[in-house]
Length: 360
Image 1 (cartoon, rainbow, N blue to C red):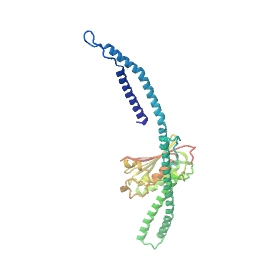
Image 2 (image 1 turned 30 degrees about the vertical axis):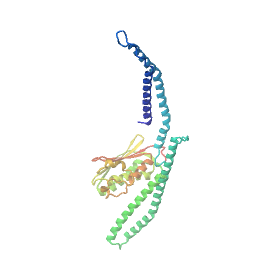
Image 3 (image 1 turned 180 degrees about the vertical axis):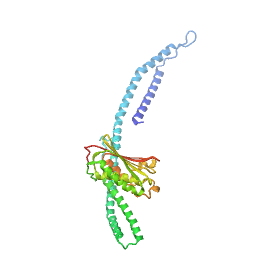
Image 4 (image 1 turned 60 degrees about the vertical axis):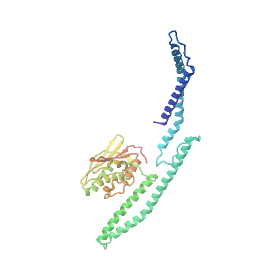
C-alpha cells in the first residue's frame, strides 16, 4: 500500500470521527427537553422523534458536503505533496553502477525532499569514486601482472625445448605452464571487463553473416568435443545478417560452446541452433550434463562464479566466460539467458536485434 493511500485512509477516518463527534455534540446541544405525560400517563414521543430527524437532516445537508469537499481537497493536497517523492523514486530507480555520475533532479526550494536529494547525489558521487578507484586498481594490477607472466611463460617454454631437461622436470614445467596460461587468461578477462565497465572497449561494428559465424564455431566445437567423445550437432541455421563485432560475437559463441562441452557428461551431446524470429536472431546452445542447481542459477553471470566447487574443481576455467558473454550480448543491445532443470538439457539462449541502423 502506498503512502498516499495510507494517508488518505487516515485522513478519511479522522474526518469520519470528527463528523461523528460533531453530530453527537450537536444533538446533545439541540436535544428537546422531556415532554409532560399525556392524559393516560405516557410521555409523548412524537415531537422527540420529529426533532431528532430534523437534527439528522441538518447534519446531513450541512456536514456531509463539507466533509466530502475536505476529503477530496485533502487527497489532492497529499497527491501534490507526494508527487516529488514519486518522481524522486523513479529517478533513483534508474541509477546503476554504469551511470553513478548522473545526478538526481533537485527542486531547489530547500525543503526536506530537496535536502534528501542532495544526500542521494552525494552518496552516488562517493560510490562513483569508489567504483573508479576499483577499476583503476584492477587495470593497473592487470597491466603489472602481464609482464612477469609473459616472462615466466617464455622461460618455461625455453626450458621445455631444452633436450637436457629430465622427464620429471619436464612434467613439472608443463604443469607450471598450464597454471601460468590460466593466470594469463584471468588477467586478460579482468582487463577486458574492467575496460568494458569504463566504456574503453571499441567494438567496431560491421555488417556480418551471423550464420557463417555459427558454422565456424560449430566446426571448432566439434574439434573441442572429440577428447570427451561428445557429439555436437547443428540443428538449424537460418541465414541472418546483422551489424556487430565479428571478433566479440565469435568470442561469445566460443565461450558458450566451450562451457557446454566442459560442463557435460562423457559421451554427452551439444546442440546448436540459429533461427530468425521477426527482427530478432535467436541463438541457442544446449548440452546434456548434471545441469545447474536452481538456487545458484541467478548467479551464473557473476564474476568468478563456478557453481559447486567440489564438482567443478577439476574443470579448467576461471569463472569469467559467462560474464564476458553477457557483456558482449548487452553491447549488441541483446540479451542472454541460462535455463536448466535436473534431468533435462541446459540451454544458453542469446537474442540479438537485427537492425540495419545498429551502430557501435
